[in-house]
Image 1 (tube, rainbow, N blue to C red):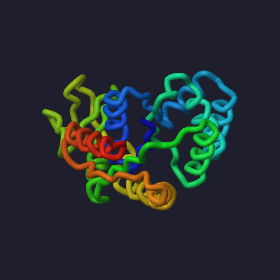
Image 2: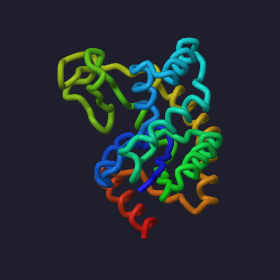
Image 3: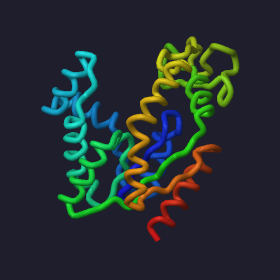
Length: 218
């Protein structure tokens, strides 16, 4: 299957993408991974992206599109893929359509993870990260540490990252509504969108998503 995954920040896209890609035996292609791989390997596109990032500027669409196009040429994506974080806006969605037309293939579905805005704020603003190891994360409501402010894993101090503050989360949601949400209507016009609730346990959401994708493919 060839799938695009969309949803607001805090919807659990990364978590669901990993499970869905494994269940469907297709590569999980995330924008973050594309950037890290290109930058670490020093590719021409990676160098371009790094220059913009070093200047504190947004990486232009054409650079992101170029990275995605190169990744979709890899053999493991020949029989399917799950795109996470791309396309991020209408220009990227239109560019993806052009890439797929060139390859003589098409998307099978666009999975839209729906989460109420209040829940997004609660999920992200409640996150606490360990200063000693950022892989150790907790939540003031959903995954409380045994001792408040102390990491269960290593005893490090737990803190709220600046980009997890409520003010920052609301700004990220504004950007999502303005930049990314329009691609849902774009894909709805093509009859590709399936929307599911991303509330509940991870396994429940994965099962819901798999069922929706199966029905879409039927």
